Image (cartoon, rainbow, N blue to C red; front, side, top):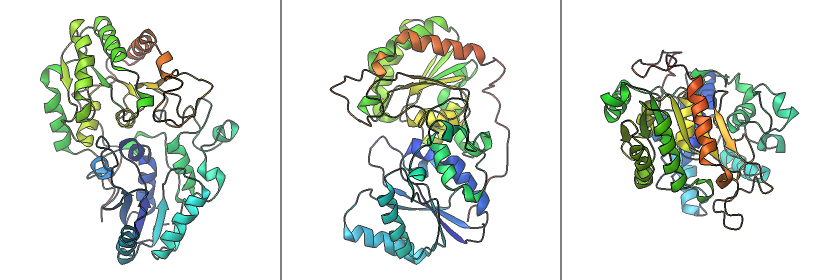
Amino acid sequence: MGKGKRVLIYRLGSLGDTVVALPSLHLVARAFPDAERRLLTNVPVDVKAPPAAAVLGDSGLVSGYFRYAVGTRSMFGLAKLWWQLWRWRPEVLVYLGGSRGVESARRDARFFRLCGIREMVGVPLTEAMQKNLYGEAAAGNAYDVTYGDCEPEAARLARNIAELGDPRLGEAASWELWLTVAERATARAAIGVEMLAGPIIAVSVGTKVQAKDWGRENWRALLSKLAASHAGHGLLLTGAAEENEASEFAADGWRAAGGGPVANLCGKLTPRESAAALSSAKIFVGHDSGPMHLAAAMQVPCVAIFAARNVPRVWFPFGERHRVLYTRVDCMGCGLETCIVEKKKCILSITVDEVAQVVGSQLSVVGEGERDSNQEPLTRNRKPSMR
């Protein structure tokens, strides 16, 4: 590989979808170091969902973007996208799309061929490429993890483009966002000197999906317990601007219990500045959400509260330092965004005491000297070139 001068990368989604694709994006950068790499992505469909460009920023992983509205049936819109791609004349397509079925992948391949692309990598034209491998199949691939169930989505994406090389999923450098000095400085200023002087618990209470919401009262009760049991810790709240009020409601429980300083940064930072802020935390606690994946990418141990709308492990935070609370129920894998009939019995079966116990256990194993919020992370490899 490495011969293509113009490489088009296809990846849809927002914060979490972009973060789980980071190892694959790093792999593409290594496979095509001298190419101009552009990302074809979607216009965000939710006000809470940041675009991929806000996540990748000046990382050097891509140098430009093409955007379109997902699900568009407009002939004008499709013709406009075709013309943009045809004029740029990409030589290679790297497909990092989600699992939407083999026939959908075939339609995508036909469209990209019409755009003049002849070399395609990773188009999921088989059921195996569409699915997250399970059991022995998942355990036997090159991206094995220590627990069972389906392979993580990050591993499925990397497996589909394995011809490009080793994705190095287990290496921190493969999750690098190359945050700038300015982004780190903005985050530190937002957190404040007082909080940076002590250990920080980062929390995100928000989610775009009703079925994944653990509930305001649960979050308030949890923060009250954590404040009482972990004196001297600061509370860092992160999320979209629309989650500011819910975060304040939860933080009132922390304050009432005599907790340490609070920094509610919801809506105040960009996704990349939020990543810099999260890197200062000793632990992250939150839903299955974009901020959870961002914290995991920053190598912060996560305690994640999951609904069972997805099968286990596919969207868990990647790595071995995390703890996930997930209740297996008869309807797991339903994919519902709104759960009415079963009344969210999966996620609401998770108690405040259970989460508090897991958070306490995680905090006890994270050594006081393991994460120094006043030190910049070591540079682990060379930033990709941007063309």
